Amino acid sequence: MMKTMYTKCNLIHADLSEYNMLWHEGRVWFIDVSQSVEPFHPKALEFLYRDCTNVVEFFNKQGVSGVMSAQQLFRNVSQLDIPECEEDKFLSQVCSDNKQ
Image (tube, rainbow, N blue to C red):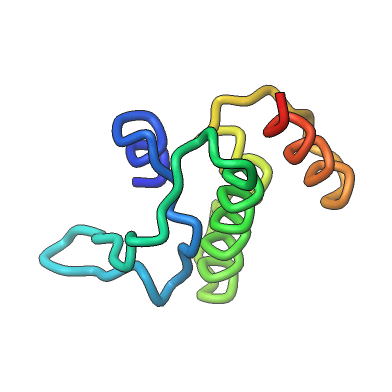
């Protein structure tokens, strides 16, 4: 859903967490999308990475197996080729990519 939102709707939720994902009739629904931003927003990629971190942390806490890392999810959604590394370094690369 994050990738669909990014690629087809040209939006990043910017506040995604378990509190903004609803499970209804076998499908996930995102709510509270009024603060969504377009990918060219100055902090768009930072918001996307935070969304990825929130989602991954939630599913890891639930004991779901096979959850990708926040960095993997970010790269999958954004299609940016940022190598996996320490979180601070990854985030600094995300921020520098967003300014280009």
